[in-house]
Amino acid sequence: METKKLFLRINPAKIHFLKSILEGYEGLAMMSTIDVKQGLVSVRYAESVQEDVFFLLEDLSLTLRT
Image 1 (cartoon, rainbow, N blue to C red):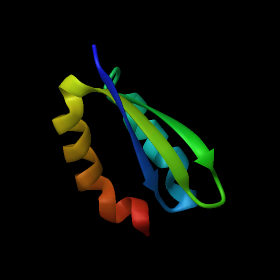
Image 2 (tube, one colour):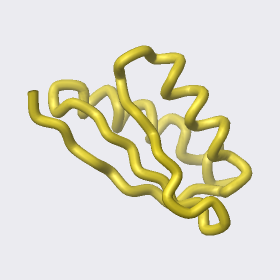
Image 3 (cartoon, one colour):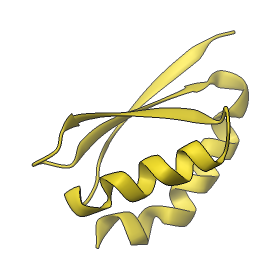
Image 4 (cartoon, helix red, strand yellow):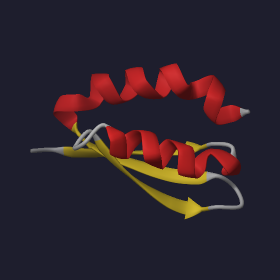
């Protein structure tokens, strides 16, 4: 199984929110915080679920920026 990594910059106050959402979708993706002050995180996921991960992140994009 091939895995991919995506780097995101989000509102630092939303880091816990995104982590909770991703954990709620068991096995979809794993998130790690790289720099909490800058809101930089990485999201690792299986290539087979990339479409689902992108759909979820797109749906949450406005929430994660504000």
